[in-house]
Image (cartoon, rainbow, N blue to C red; front, side, top):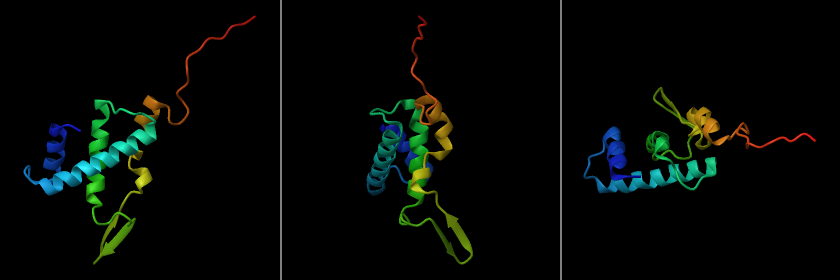
Amino acid sequence: MTDTQLAKIKRRLGIAPDDTEEKTLIADLVDDAESYFKLLTDTTEIDAKYNFMIENVVYKLYGRKGSEAVTSETVDGYSVTYQELDDLFKPYMAILNKDFGLDGSLREKGKVMFL
């Protein structure tokens, strides 16, 4: 992830640009999101057109900070339900299925010869 993208994430999360402690955490979350993306799509490189997905997953992971193992919690009538870790890329599955054929829809091109 580039410094520009890191600055964008910090800005959207309300983190001061010079906050190095949070910068390290954000870098870890970006690494986690990128690793999950690569595993999900069976790729080794992430095209820049998918950066928005990585960024949005980082926002979700950052929001869960301190509640990583919790699926939902209620405090004084305020209820929060977190997405399962397996569902982090769920909003983007239509795009990923189209681009990577994760649902088996992507087929190799070939020829048919009749004898």
